[in-house]
Image: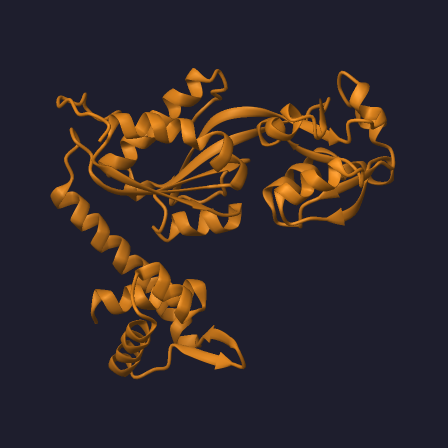
Length: 321
């Protein structure tokens, strides 16, 4: 069973598309197809079925994916153990983050990290919370940045980097825009826009004000895109509940107003999550250290759980190139 066959299988299993898998792997689509066929021949089982225009894993494929993840993760760890230099991190580091964190927090971390570890190639991926946690578990991401607490999973480690206020986002002419803070009683039957269930922003909404029932706001529409959500608020459709850093741009441009939410559930966290077994990867250890330093420098650092020991001081000077 060749590693390239497993990599091709995992890419197709994740994307459920030979075309997207080929693009991701930088292969010709015909090459991906040949590798899947070779793997199926070796195993004597079909791994994918096509139902109309939809590609699906067969039961055999669904059983194989867990093993493929584990094998490829172990191979990558073995390579790192041989070539890794704690004093001079190198190789690739793949970081995932929510859309708003990619735009508003991650760039500062990446700039500092690039200066400290110029030999590391950083790959950034965007996704929702569920996608990011799944990718971290499978070893496809070295770390993920999200809002809220990480899932309870012994395989994962996490650190709270920051606490952020929850803001009621309203049209600039809305009655709430003149308040210093929004109390729960101010939200009675107020039309609200929210993201779909399962999204991190929707969980914030449900936790903070969803329990008010008929005394609270009413979700009149669900919007999947954060940008579309802010645009709908600006157009006067209703209000929304979002972290302060997520709406700093629209507020600065005068598109919407943002008023702090009062009460016990008026804050959220920015959390970094990684796979415990990857803590010995020097590029990841350096990134965790850098992220903590940057958030502390921003004055938004929160409480944390223990993180891997700091890597030894780097003894070689390098430029940014």
